[in-house]
Length: 366
Image (tube, rainbow, N blue to C red; front, side, top):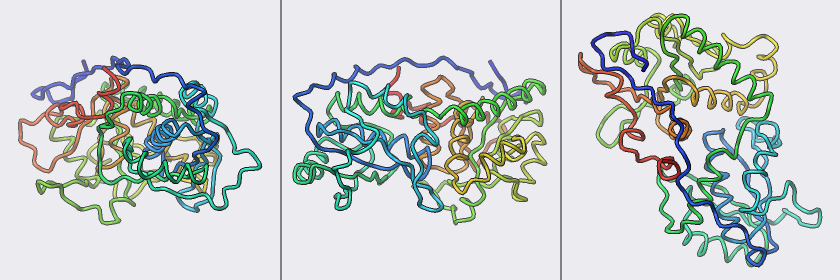
């Protein structure tokens, strides 16, 4: 059991016992259910979205009996395309989906995408939506490109179709694994941070905090008027109040050091970014790219593996990191708060995804 430094604080319980799948395996794909058309899509906006996008695509392709074409990855900065294998292990994707949906790496040369209809699909797409909005277009054209959109943070499945639910679980958890070089670098950073925290007898806390996001006006409040976005100094004050001491090792997802983080480091001297940890060679390889996708993929992994995860903003990164942590048993996800009583403890600020078990991960794993 790991505890925060303040002896009067209630300890954070370390679970670290991975959950087991509790969905029924998707029914095997039947040849008679297979049509001759294709579903295509792209992964966009970073790994926190990729997980949901591939799940939606798998569900749509299976329901239509279509062949799913492995996606490209759109560069968030330039809009240029990257290969799926630039970030993810392609063979693992094929292995995880084998038998549940027909997959091809590329379209046949005779199939043109020039006039492919594009259909926007709400995340966690329902059977009715596929039937009414997508299937007629697919039947007419034999090919459809889907683009997931996220109408709200909805972490539940409600399709009333157990097979589609199972497919979604199968696709979301474990299908997208990092390719070897990125995986090794992410693991190396985690090992360093774990070693430093053990040497100082503290915890390794990953904080999703990017100053460029906060500077874009992230100052909204939730439906109850509570603050949703937190600056570095606010995160530091919160962590101090709930009992984390100076021995705590903090990893911040901000790539390069910013003066906005100085106050956080003043409170917690062992605060690091990727730039502080990576070797010059690795920085050249992973941080000098025009694409931020590599950086965010590393961040996603580190935040999923730390002793504690603290999101500074709401959204898909928080949602999907929480999901991965829940599945692996690392359910120590703490959400900052403006008002912290003198007796407050970290355990009192655990994410409602964990305390209320209202995350999709709890429908997929038990």
